Image (tube, rainbow, N blue to C red; front, side, top):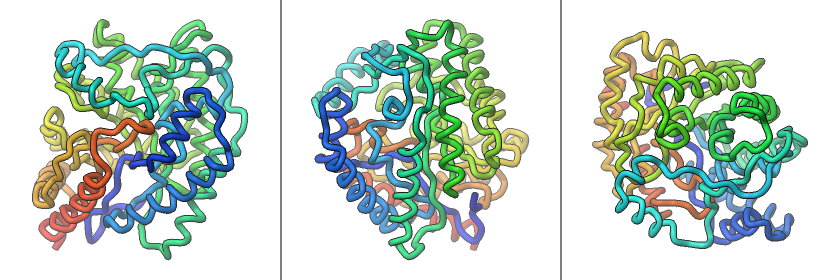
Length: 388
């Protein structure tokens, strides 16, 4: 994993806007309709090529395939694993239930049939196993080939994969005896995907919103201790799945849910960090731009808090159509860098993805790219101030 050296590097959290034609294909397939695989393959390649070019044009250093070939950041595993079927019903986040107007606003914003609804994800109805590594290997090969067309106009590339915890929380268990057994089975299955990404030479990003989000979702009516027990289960499972993968090749993304809402039921970072920090990842990406968590950079004033990891602070909010001013981005990076004590140990990032499920997005496409350009411009300003 590259460190910032003479300048602060830039990246993002994974998902980027999909073209409407591809959204239609994903939503149709998610609904169980027959979709031409040849048409899907061509659409994914075209969208991936375009998304790579746009990232480079925006000035990003560490890029990916935008996750455009996946229906969402975690439910796509139903096409690569056995055991999933039907449709579940995920609990509404506690803060949205607490403020009914926020819930209604979200429903209005998501009032479209052409989107993948993560609140109604498939369930585990049989034994979960990873049956075929070909799709993830092909995804990695495609990214390698398309990156080769860019003449090296980037620093590094990453491919994301979900935490077993987010799958266990959102794709309900109707097969295993208990939650821990389900998490262990998922982690064992995900080892194939983690290993394939690492073997292809990419950074592996583990998307683990469950380590924060589930406090006010699956565990919203339960004691904090019970949620933290879940976190420890997931951490143990992830570490086992990462066996043999160098720590410096792994980055962990944790967030409190990528949606516009009050977020006043979010668990504080300091409550989960003793367990989350046990994951064998060389970098951690955290939401730090949104108004609920912007203050938590102060925790990193204690050198022991970050340890020897890199920090990828979110300095761009992915739920608002405001385009952050580059100076604002620079100010955020400076605050974090001063808390950490070394600007070379931070990489500028976003709070989360911009289209974590096909068709589900709060930021319009043109604004996404304006935000990412602002991220790059702000990082350049901060680099000049902090690194000369």
